[in-house]
Length: 327
Image (tube, rainbow, N blue to C red; front, side, top):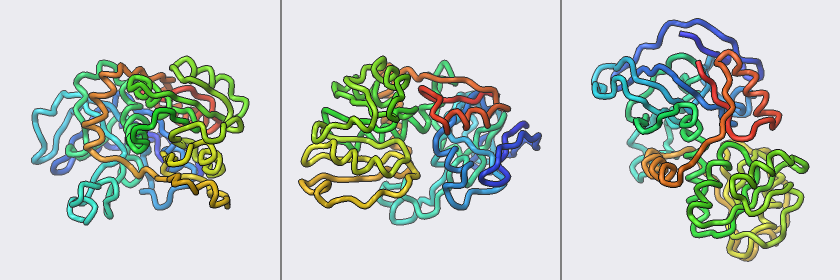
């Protein structure tokens, strides 16, 4: 198989020809049709997340067709379109797993981080942590739903019944959640890098009530906010923007340091909460919602060998929507 391999954090991925992976018990081998590029992939490649498997094939928003199964795997999956997300395995017996909080498992494996992912022509996955996507006619359009959609959905749920929601960082997750929020009857206010007119127009085109720079955040006008950008300086900005009793949700796996701030920004029963990973239950909820809301993902396609270009475009904020690699 062909794969883009990370040999050392902070260095470009290298295209390699490797032996086709062999599925173990309960595993499936998938011929990759598309793999979206997530900001988490960027954190892994740039060395901002500790202890990745090395060498590593990144990528955890995978759509493909099952072509081989391991022992004890479900034979009916052969030939079916499958999606593989970030959460690749949980122990099933720690206190978090037993409580239905598998996203907090003490001994998890993560696709494209601690097990090889989808920046390749083939990938092996645990069938229990893969999702049937027979209704997904376009694998490129479906790929961003496997993380941007799922993490966005988990973040949105944490805002409760909030009507007016600010999204700080308008990338892949925000463009999906904007569509769902509007379908639910909510109002979206998009905050981008100051001066990023292209992204602001993109947000308005998706139905946002307002779009502007994060330096234009208005005090106390929002019911809730979600921070997708990995920028700790946005935390006090978002807290100022929400009303008393409002909530600020951190939707990313990594964020720069949060600056020292006045307690007055939290006072008034404002809350902050982080999102960690996802659960399989999130997917069972989210995919039907995305279908009913008629979510349309906006994608930019790159051939597999251009993975470094896709990562650099994401790093530089050159994308509206999601980058997707196609072998």
